[in-house]
Each structure stands twice: as C-alpha cells, then as structure tokens.
Length: 67
Image (cartoon, rainbow, N blue to C red; front, side, top):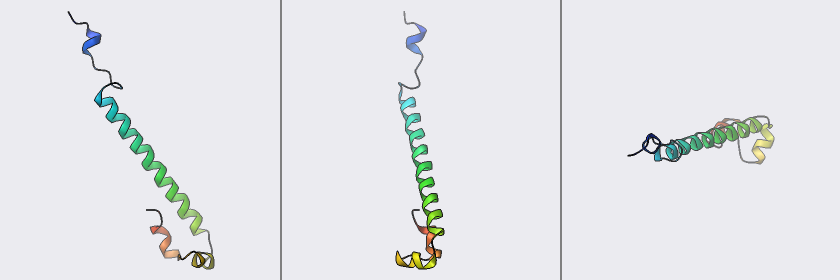
C-alpha cells in the first residue's frame, strides 16, 4: 500500500520545479541585462557631443546601444 507522501509530487524535485527555476533564472537574467543597458545608456547620455564623437557615437544613437 502506497503512502500519500510517495504519491504527492514535489515541486522542486520534479520537472515542474526544474521549469520554474529555469523561468525564474531567465527572468533574473533579463532584468539584469535590462539594467546594464539602462546604466550604459545613462552614462553615455551624460557625455558631451565631442566625447561621443571620439567613440563614434551621436546622441541619437545612444538608445540603440546595448539593446
């Protein structure tokens, strides 16, 4: 006779738990990438036009950086 404990699935040891961890990791990685891009764009927008020109960018190109 099987006990109830052996019949109930565990979330973290099951494929569902593995998928949830994978989705959570993807979410964290996406937010981290978005934040890095946001910081990069903020720093670039603080540079003068001359400095941007030295690195081959213009103000209008900043939004396309790291997207």
